[in-house]
Image (cartoon, rainbow, N blue to C red; front, side):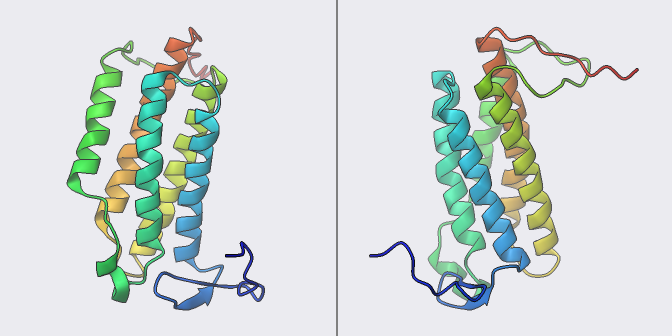
Length: 180
């Protein structure tokens, strides 16, 4: 099978099930941003993340494929795709609680940064927030599984805690926001 098909050369792509749509519609922007998020997480993983962090990031990457496939599937074909379940969200919450219990309590906003892996996880957090905003916008136009919105919201919280945890592992200082 060839990588290129030339079927998108006129600005259209196929959704799961074969329906052709313009590449600039919100649904495509949503799953494209989820794909971008997955790539940023892959970039973070390639930069010496702690084993515990890397294992969680790998789980997240697989779940983002489920979200991307769901978003790429028109409502009339939805029954054929996997879905994000309550268990996936509960697992994110468990990861948050476990990692956060090993961190100093925050009293101020902190600046994103730290080690390369930590900074990239902070970057992934911002892409996750953008994906969430786009999916919320899409949900106002058509029916979208609300579990996706909940998952992305929880994911950005987890990524924040993971960035802090990674930076602690790498002995990097957290810099407080200086609100002069």
